[in-house]
Image (spheres, rainbow, N blue to C red):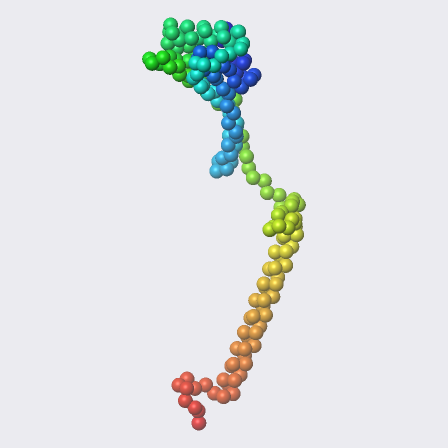
Length: 181
């Protein structure tokens, strides 16, 4: 008898029960867990919005709604297979607790980053688009110019050091600043 609720809910993502409320199927997206290299599967949950003003156009669902309402008045709670449990609270409000889906159906999958050194792909640098190979060549050329600069600075420093040593060897070294006789 209550299977019509599950079929209506999973088919239309919403099931309105007159005088009780509306059950909605809410989808939750997958979650990436990079620390553990896993991706949690997307999941579904059932939400209940209590509302006594909803009117359902389906006569079968109206009959089921009446049966659920009568069972809640009589027993205080009713469990529906595959959906959850409706309970009536002392002040007349109806609560719903959905069942959780078996974890075997929504297992996480292993996810690893794949870095392909040989693959060519487009890169946006500033407002210009280039490839990863062009950028590699650009940075390798910049390294060689930096190395040339360092070499030229070392050569100039060593020449100036040699000239200074030659000057001091010709004139003599006086540590006290006095003019030598």
